[in-house]
Image 1 (spheres, rainbow, N blue to C red):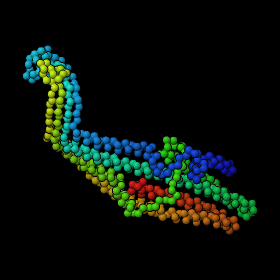
Image 2 (image 1 turned 90 degrees about the vertical axis):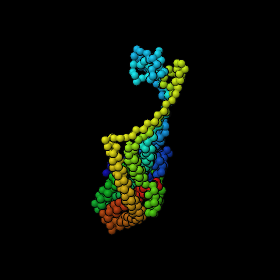
Image 3 (image 1 turned 60 degrees about the vertical axis):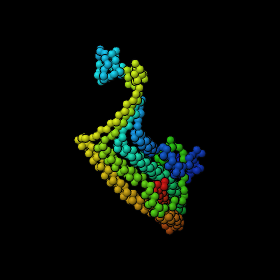
Length: 451
């Protein structure tokens, strides 16, 4: 037992200052960073890859809207081309198809080409007007709204993770304090039983029972220290480039008050990203139906070309022929028959639209249920904190009185051990109750968008 106590003392001397919240102010190095919940959330947003991917998707969707709008405007290119066609050995003699070709010009072997040497240098402006292009802008806007809502969902998920790790780490540090106090109490009681045994006021069995209790408390302390280390490392992964960076957590000693039910419902209805995402998805699905139906309508294509397309790369050719000129065209293709592919695409879009409606309805019902559950959880957790604090005081007083009775020979060792166990259990429950309320409050704030 002495060897075990010595090894434990050495272990505590090495690791406890790194995890005990109560000792951080004196034991932590000067370079330690003080982290509040808001600071932890800000750091996590900069380091978490999933949130970074959501930010990138949101920015990309905003650019998609600009791209869709650009498709409604005419596009212009400067086209340059040189075409050489093998001659067929004959010469043109005033061809009516190509008046510019005279008798000294070799005829091309490919009849589709205009001349053996052909130069094209033209500015080309094209424009396509159709319902599909117009719908694409609205569809891109709906997709951008979905991406914005998904970004907010990712942000709130990240905040929920940080809140859990933040308060979990604080609770783990406080539980180390509780375990340390329980170990000190068990050690003190062991000393008391040994003194009473030496004075022949207690049996050796009391000493054995106290020693067993002390050994268990020492194991509990080692487990609490390990859990605190793990909690701090998990949080540090989100906060720092180096998870071993020293830091201290700070939080308000008085928990935030709970908002009224009416305030919570009003905020949740306006700021819930799941509901906004479902609404935007339904709008996008309805636009997909419109885009599919647009295949029944023709698109108007406009083209304007200005430049040269001649045998010489010049504005004027032989005999002062003007090479520079323009052409314009308008094209409209009317759909006649596509073997019901358009009808099937419309049906596919309608099926997906109906599914989006079902999703929206389910999201609304789930929001109502989550709001009721989260608010009820926060109310119960808030009401139980005061009760747990009173229970801690009662259990501490019970242990004090039981020890006095044992010292006077009026109580047994089992009563003292039972009082010690009761105090430890209620202290741990008190720490869990604080974390429960803080987590429930944060979840409620996430639903309302106030955090």
